[in-house]
Length: 195
Picture 1 (spheres, one colour):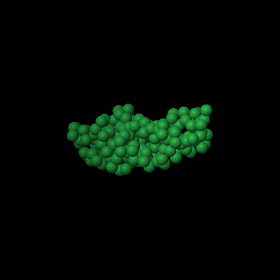
Picture 2: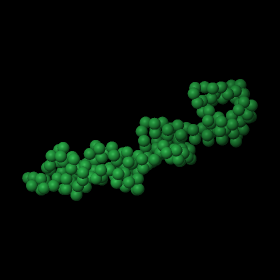
Picture 3: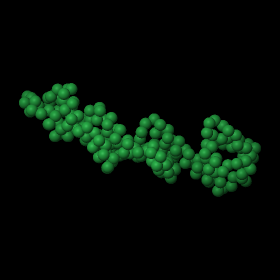
Picture 4: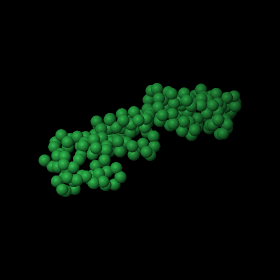
């Protein structure tokens, strides 16, 4: 049975493990601590299984944290990234739960921020709802995000003021996902009289 003969600090947060006097592998320090890797410890099957499970967990958290470091993501998108990275399903699920408990993964926060960004770029509620659903967010977080926005009619009127009333602006508003009522009301009497 192989025995840990040395543990040496490697790059930050990692430790090099020697088995029977030969270099074996480099593992995260927290994994080594959870598994109980110490000099003189024999690595039986149980210890190796535990090490493998802890390494999968650490890998899943690393992949997820790297993805979230770049930008906020909803749970479904992060799960897809973990799947593409070939992270074991159990480790991926556990990572998602850990990140959600820590507040780093929050579909409601993502929905609010994404809805606000899309509204600022001139999108209507239907387009925002569609985008959020495509991102993997549905139900209450979407509805709450839409309720937090400035009313769709106010946003449509602002676009009409900037672009001017007319059929071209009406088509633009419809293409941006504004409701027909918001389009009609924002264009008002000027549009009704427009040839």
